[in-house]
Image (cartoon, rainbow, N blue to C red; front, top):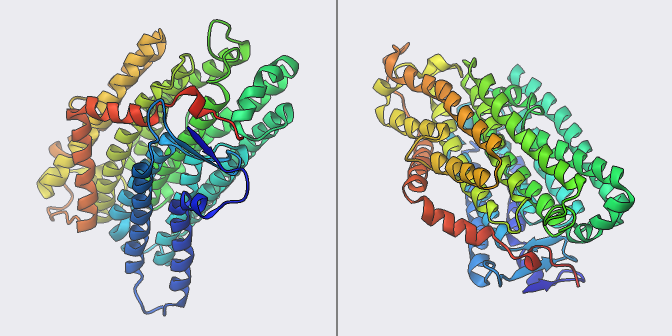
Length: 522
């Protein structure tokens, strides 16, 4: 059942926007508070207020999940502003994932930011995360090209500023400049592709565009090609898949570690979620376009482009990471490879008549969230102690902080895809789906690149156990960072020990009937 608001927002309609309103309102209030406080007052408490705002937003999302039934074939969908904004099971589930990741990143980064001498305005760094997360939430619910672009720009501009807050670092200045330029280029690609879709259909609503694409392919086939492929290219830059990934290592290295984690997890996840909305809203309903026995050449080429990008990301990300000695750059290239794994279920999912492959995507996204944030939490502590981000800083970590080293081992074997961890089952589910769809070449690339990745993941473990440390001093882990780390470790193991239970929950949350997913405004 779809509930649609076609006129101005009413009070009950606004209630569905409360998660976003909390984040934007808190960002404004905390920014004003930061400006009014004397310079002698420490800004550390702003981090906890920022965390409270995120927790409040998450609580509202949970309340929305409990207030109506957004799951299953008879799911209820709240459609606002002529279906430009949707509250459904997929949106609410993705919002919880985004908010959980943001809270963990903030928790693990509180002490890191406070101790970073290159960041003079620490309070602003905390509060600027709020509009960035709000932009990510908008992308979870978008059903229109305009609201999608607003969410992308709110997220993008906020992250530009977050990187630039490290004013006393030349690497950060270079990273911010590169990210602004690359971000502008990717936004231009996306906007150019949107303009062509609007030009051939006369519409911005994703559902209506889906209905008009069949005729548009007949009348303006070349223009549809241009629009879709520019959109794919723009999102490929946002999610950092090869060959659009060259910015990632430099930007990740220059940014503060919590900001790097935010880029690697929240920004990447939000862009993927928007891409899911585009692919499934404009393609999955259009049987002559993508599905069924008569697949158009345009549809085949879109599928092939996604598969090629996935394969390139896995190969390039894995092989480029082999020679890295800087851990931030290594994790950036690891993120490129993982983006390839996340693209696989999207590409092969378009060849089916259901959205069940979104379950594979969601499971691996959750696993990627925990194992990546946990790895960055350990890196934040090691880097601050060693004074650099090089691999040699992990030498003798087991003897200086045995529990931290043990947690890092769990996260690394999950990233490598070894049992029994969330990363292993996430890759396994995607691998089985690829094999089921007879995309054996993609499955083979997944296996080979996963095996190759053992080398650089285990190089960190080798440093921790088999190399002599530069100092015998014990590693001090701040309490907030330790909490975030062990939440990530516990979640990674839970996903590994109970994969079927989590997969069933996610499949129920993100699998929508065709009518619900693309219901039109009244």
